[in-house]
Image (cartoon, rainbow over all chains, first blue to last red):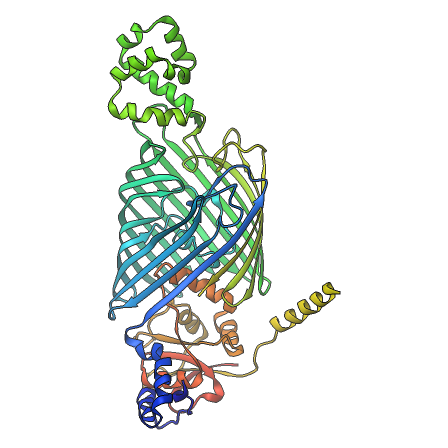
Length: 451
Length: 143
């Protein structure tokens, strides 16, 4: 940068020309200087590299894995549950076309998961209009698109009651960003359409042929308000070979405001999983909300969050599902049922799990079940002790979180949280197994950086 | 013993962290060929948050920023944008990592910024008012 040290005089308007001229005289020193000033020089074709990382620790009376956002936090993984690193490269091909790619490595239950989180081409013929195509992230709730960038929000994990509601993240498709100025405010429309290629999210195999949505946000002096709707047809959310085909409808509204150091963040989401064709299941309707209040005191931000999720469905055990499924087969094939002995008929009605092990019953059903149904039976039996529909598709839970964010260095935040999670009524909440206590307490620490 | 040292260090660092802003006056500058003569604080705020992308005269804006987290930079964001530097970093991280926005280009010092502005008609920047000269045009002062 030696070349740039000389003060600019009014008569010389062109810094680059001046630098080159001087560099002739001091070729070696200025060669280095030119190299050092490359980022500034390459103004018309810059490659930007940005990144973010989180290192975390969670402890408490955690006896079962639980869903948090599109992740599963493991009871065994005290270190590493929240560990994340993301690297983003973006480049402008010209004034109207740019490319962005983001690689994301995350701690998961059995190690690390590396994925191309974002990879898209952005065509922006005007500064208020752009079309993006490639691999994008669903804007399901307010922080969904940057849910892995811990530095971007006050919590360690965004409120799981709302953020776990839909186990999908990246999609392949197209979105449009269109900004309208309304006085001092910006209204941004983000319609999108795409599919979710077969992938695993939060332990679920997800496969979506077609989904579409509209995200709208109003950004003004004190923050932003947003509303979003998403509709997905023929989604397959599978687990252990049991595929749950369904239509999904999600609607969410949110506010993120800061007025005189007081922070208010709140979201409400309603969702509907339409399991047409699965015996024993009706449509699952659920709603979830949270309210976060915080008070910024310089580098410190203490905050409190109340959250609740209520799937408006009587959850059933897997064993009831088997019973209902067998019941459907029996009704459809009265002759098969009548051919069974009275003992076997009683066994079917009272203990369907034991009935599945009975050779006579198994043989009778093998002749009337389709190959697909037969293939699903072992999975159904393995889910017999599970609560269905499983979390995170349906759950009832409340939680209170006390947190502190401390921005102790530039682009570095230290966070601490104490959380009490209470599954409601008969639900296991977002836990994979039934928790031993009515209330689960967690302490979490995390450090978030961005660069 | 150790805890006393720790407490002293804690207060010392608290003192350092809470250091007051520089008294230096800042000048918001543009290319001398830009027809704009003045700008409001609200408009500047919107430009530095990436919400406003056109000058009132229709020219597409390219804002510049100071690379170093100096007192001047802290003062500019506190007084004009109304946010601390960490709030600004968190704000931009939401836009950068969703591909929805790019923060202002950073340059290492007032000299580099001035020569950039002098050769780029679409640029806007802020520098220490003492560095301002006639290679650029001052349109706003942050006292």
